[in-house]
Length: 430
Image 1 (cartoon, rainbow, N blue to C red):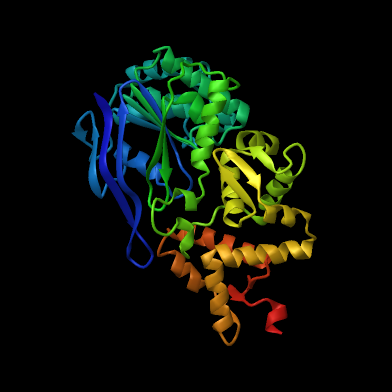
Image 2: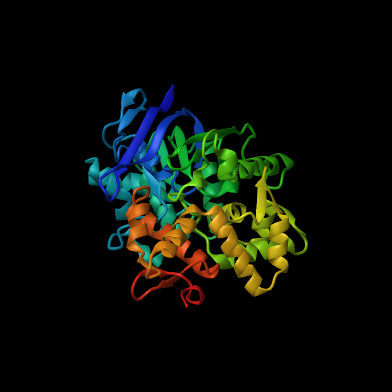
């Protein structure tokens, strides 16, 4: 029996102008008994929204979400969630934080204490029951979060970026401890669903990886992993899987579009969350030794010592601007990218501006409006309202900030922070 079944699930939220903004569209998904599944996808793919529908925290607008063949309409007792932010109550002790779920279920105090003690020992926190969260390291705080979820003996464990707030070594240790509990049948949980940005983490843990497309979120690819656990991160099989998932995750919107205009062809395209310094830093690293213009993405990530969630937007920006080509888990400097690396600073900014106007519709739209405006200046609110037709207010603000930074660097337009107005560059105004 499937533990979770989603059929045609869709979810929308209201945009600032009152129109519906679709976050998830026609999602069909199953979580089988005895399975660990990882959800991967860039910002805007609806991963966390999907998790909250499964947990019963928010309803789906369309389609059916079911737990053990029963429709999900509210929080389900058999489903527990672990959050990225730990979400501990700072004024409660570790023991009291762990007992919260049991208290909400009406479990008597003596039973709560017994079960909390047992799970704290299981998760490696025996002796810390009387400590306050501020006395704990990040890894220990997340162990408390996991213990709080496990103490209710959940059928399904949902993990929303549960290891991403931890340093690499701590996250890997906690991940391995969780797998030891799962594979050793030391917890009663029958299924685990993980949201992650970390490809290696997903490959090391999951039986199946689901890759979501964005705007709206929908299932784009699926990778089955049949390797036994524990898995060796340096084995040929694991490295091949990591390369495969990197390739799927870094498909350029032009490649990913099945038909019609690609995602990046309109002003409401979700510009990648990266800045010019990171774009040029990765470009310089790619052009230099030992890569000399060609790199395997996992190896480039190791050299850069940056997590996947920071590098993926940079890869996307390089491909969008025509400075690099990403294909099947590899990245290659384009001839234009090589010219960019070799150019002096003035020429780099000219080239950046040219590529921006050619490949980023929002930037071209702003520039055209400024050229047609007699005063050569316009309020940024005009473009924020445009973006809010596609995104939530916070994400619209982020996308506009990226467009402003890129445009200023390429001298396509200027920006006055005091008046919140976009302007034509000073030289052209004069």
